[in-house]
Length: 335
Image (cartoon, rainbow, N blue to C red; front, top):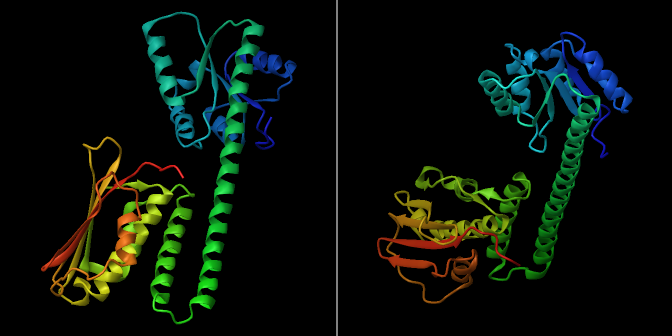
């Protein structure tokens, strides 16, 4: 069994009336499993928090106010966990019992019902199946933990690589014209990497990417859009786009004047065949805009930083203010 703590294999029993707890404990111990009998639901929940593989409870013990305590424990268990309960029921198939059974399943999730009086072999078999399901959960947890560890290590190595690139560039570029722009773009990429690391390597929220890039401009930038989670490639791409647009606005566009503003909006295109985000940047209140005389690297970056849905990004150099729109695909693209 994957290591899950000193109590990971024990079976907790809660059957406060009659000989159910005694009989169940004896059968399970004869099968080779450690058991612990809990006198009440509160004690049961305390022991669940310390670790267990299965819990055997009688249905009448759950028909109390204390049941909510157990339901709350189930509700906050880790995502990898689906703790198994074996509920010992009485005979009969009344509508009231069916309603209770549905209620227990809704609140506790992974529930197996066993009618009393039970055959010892049947009881041990049911518990063994529950143990197997818990074993798979422990294994899934180990896989998730290893994946998260590898993801953190990869992100750490990526940050180190960016630092090495910056050091090499600093020694190589000297005072070349593109030196400052290169370092600024690299810094924007590093900030996006920080957001991705905070998201456990899975990506970042669009809101965080935008605000992270534009935080120095304060209220002159209006940001509007739904909560959208970007995969790592999209997060990095939009971070570079935000840096490029923000830098241009601060050097040549609307943010060169106190009255200038920027509107950043995005939405999901519900009519697209694949998940697509429509991103819009709009400047107002700046100097009169004129189209650039040459197509520089910044323009190429704005065209290619994120995978598009087949429609090229739109650049509008209207005299009253520059605007930019891109329709980016949100699905992870193959390398």
